[in-house]
Amino acid sequence: MSSTNRNRKYTMHIFYSSLRLHDFALADFALCIVGVGVELTTVYDPETSTERGGPRLIFPKVNPVLISISDDGGGVVGGGTLYALSRTPAVVRPLDFEPWFFALDDLSHTVWRELPSPPLFPCRLNPLEFLDPPKVRVAAYALVGSHILLSVSVQQLQPQQQQEDKGTCAFDMDTEQWEMVHDSNLPFDGQALPLGSDDDHRFVAVASAADVTVYRMVVGISAVTGKKELTIVALRVVVASNCRILPGNHLCAMGKGSFASFEFRSIAAASMGKVGRARIVHRTYSLVDDGEDDWVVMVKKQDRQVYKLRDPHAYLAHPSWAVALFSM
Image (cartoon, rainbow, N blue to C red):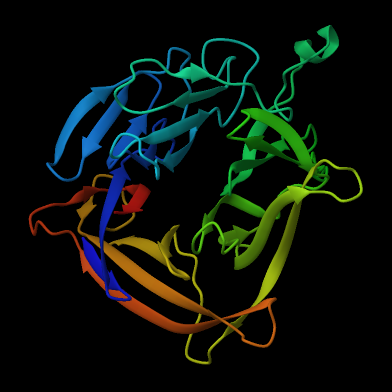
């Protein structure tokens, strides 16, 4: 489907899964959409609507975290680097076993490069810990400048136990090394999306309370310790009287201070075996600075559109969930 935002036309590519617990992760990379799963890697070219195989991860990962970096220099057109990080690192085989972090420099390469594991992963366990290893899961991440920020959650033995912060680490894509940059976890869930260029430093994400929040994040050098540190501040979002921010099922960065939320609905009844046409509710939000306060952003405009599947005879089996979407 297509949508116009600030005189720029975006084509939305939406991928559905009939299984809620899917093992495939998707990312836009090298002008294509790359899917990385347990058994294979698939490369989809939206320009030609063709699909081909790609380099497979030798150490299989279930729904890994994928982060793509475009090549803005004089490299191969559509080149860059695609990073794949285990979402649920395990210390026993076969799935999500070490090594946990890889990079693919471009789609012409046939092998993923192994990279150092994050210090928050269960890299060094003593024999007693190995008998009952911690269940670690990626909780939040973001690409901030030349750094990948990462926080994890650890499954507690008792449900009533409060989640303990493990801190935030950063991967320097230039030196390819990890370093702890904050004592607390990132205050949002999932991925934080950039609202503009690298110089903007503003990101939108869904906070723990399921509210859409705008953050300012910068990785710099501490004047006290001389080490890298993360500065993160939640900006106050002022919403116009006729606007309301709804996170929907997915958030998507649109560039130039805009982002969109997508909500996926089906006419089908909840009973299994029924099918129904998909309805996609697309809301676009435009932000502007307050002008007087650097820590305030205003939602000045909200657009709402509802789409159907293009093929009038296309139906989705119930239940179907959208697992990824891209603006290209």
